Length: 241
Image (cartoon, rainbow, N blue to C red):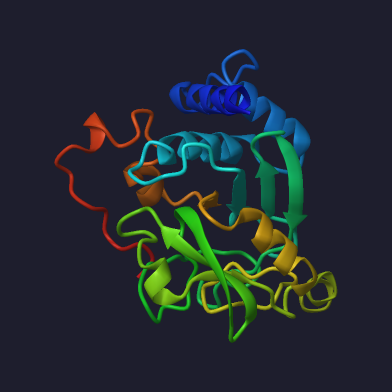
């Protein structure tokens, strides 16, 4: 098991270190295997996600071998599956699901994001999964945002993963979009418990949208994981209003 963990760490570091344009199978074995497991995901988004995993593993207190990677692509419409959960040890796809965004983030298409309490918007960036609990929305999973100014108020805002009846294929068909949350990435009730139990306790959730401010300023997407390029720049501003 230690050897397997070391191999996964090595491939993730390769994915982080390689330039985005150099996406060959020799340079990015982890990326290639995950992309093969989930043909519906945008490879460019997955490349950023694997880079973020590698950078996240270098953060203080991080799990050196997160068991899963969850990718949410908010550039896709809510009527399409846009949440993928990968087992990093076996490089298998565990879930491909619908996921809701915040009511003020957009209708079918997400367009606006925020880190501000009361915004009822989704947040972008890298999260670490924390503890599960039972609350107003049933069995839920707390998330800790790792990106200052973009999602670090997630716990304070109660941005959690939970099941919601408005996340359902029939709702997507009849009203042209899913129902919307208060900013939480809500999933189908039928899959919520299984998904939460699989990813809780220190794994990585990557929420993507082609927001230029976040892509430029994120300290977990840079090739050197927030090193020289960000020295002295301070925290990024709150996104999305």
